[in-house]
Picture 1: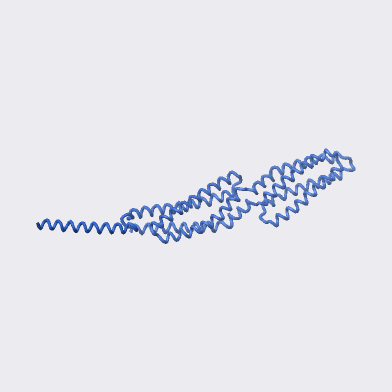
Picture 2: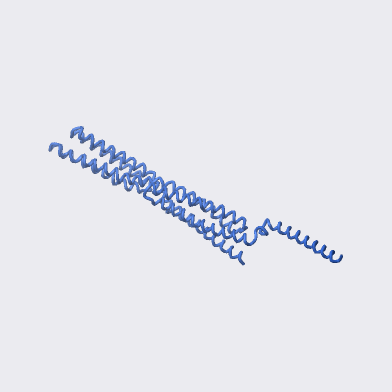
Length: 302
């Protein structure tokens, strides 16, 4: 009978212990207890460290691709680099969200604070970088340059070649006058070509306006010279010259309009002046985040 009583007492004590253990386990489950043990903490810290490294890599990749989009010399290359930058930026945003969730789960307040600071810095960086990429892919200055070096130059050469035979076809009396008019027309068009380069490269609105006024004067001088020539030569001889000059003026107008938009100059300016300090601040925060998570990992193994 005594053995039965002892057995009954032991069973009772075991049941009580099991009940208390179950209650303790369920209480700790909401924090870092039975369902969030050392192995889980280590796994989550490992994933957090991996994400912080990838976050910094992807941010650097995005910044580099954005810079290459600005420096690209074709529309295709600019668009390709801009797309690469956007993909990397999307990965950054994904990594930030995943890392924020992990940091909250781990309860690491210092890392959460660093991450919140990075989010604000990244928002500032993103606002500038979006403007940079939108401008870079337009390539208006590059397109103006291609027009200047290609169609504009070819049309100016045809204009000069069409004028050359006119004075020799005239009598001695009119030849000197015609030669002077041809020289005025040719030099005016050449001066227009020279002004295209500085206009395309300029970032100063006032300077561009001054050049455009000079361009208008030169176009008027050319038109007046051709009108005067019309009174000296056969009408059909000057008609083709005037048509060629109209083509040149049309191309000139396109060059000025593209140059005025200044998307390459503006994107380069933003990349060199506005973006670097924002990118540096973001990278510094990401480095701090990596260091802090590495230290958390060391603490967890002690």
